[in-house]
Length: 266
View (cartoon, rainbow, N blue to C red):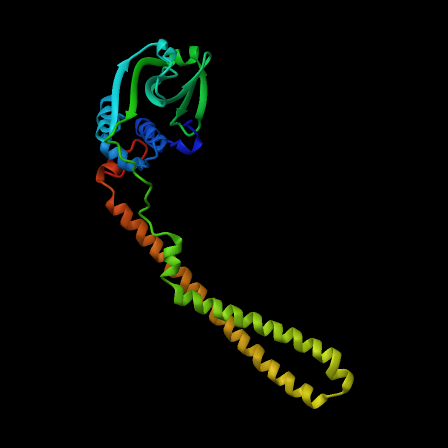
């Protein structure tokens, strides 16, 4: 299976590159872990994630993991297993992780956790200028279990289904308004084609009064429809917001304290 865009995960914090790199490998093997979940498991701090932590957690998740110090001849091995993780010194400015997703005679193909780079390729000369040889090889073993993507938030369908009575009333009022519009159009056609040419003024007066009453009812239906739509909108907004707040309270304190760019903890 070829590594593709659907396996890519971007880092959301400057020190999350190791977290995102492991997340991409897991995605490749059909498992989804949130970055927050992996950050907690890896013990990521403001100083980043250690290669030792990546190896330890990958082993716990059912991978045969090997941390090695390699050179460019690694890419000459025919049965080398992609993807794997390498530790680099990016632009000789800061340490970083790449996920290596392939290679050929000239290029090394990478998945960079940096969202500005994403999937890219480097010449072997460019790669060697950054790579210091630290490599983490990963391959799932018989203990590996796929973790499917789950959401902590209720789906929109579930939220709407819980308000099925309210939605039914809105649909009913919508049908009533449309039905009155159809009756009004039909009546206008009859007035022009039949009642006026035949001079049936008494019947015309009766139908006109009836139509006025019907249109007044229509305005009442439109008003009720608007009120119900507003109520539905408020209920959905409240439920979504409460789900989000509940999700925030479930996050560990370290999720906020270990951020490089944000300061939540005193």
